[in-house]
Image (cartoon, rainbow, N blue to C red):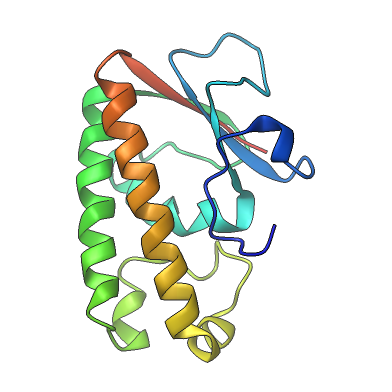
Length: 147
């Protein structure tokens, strides 16, 4: 995996167990589903603040079922984040959107690679929000299967 900011749609490309699986539908005690999408846990951590805004009980290490309506609100908020990132904001303003204590990259590391990380994060957000919108047309829930 070249960039940590990647949404993987093919389960065969998942490299290890340090991935978050996002599965269409309700939890069924089955992992590594072909219809799921996968994120390196370090990349998905950038969504933590946004998800917690709508699902306060969300924990990255647990299974979390989220209703489609809530996912659409999360998706809208993620799109706002992508737009905000596209304005090349100062690092101090990123703290409103990204909890750097939850991500592997530190504040200083992110700042050092800011342009690259922002571009890749925007691409990942755009892919994920399209996927969310498509899944919410046919599913009542989307489940996060934590690490």
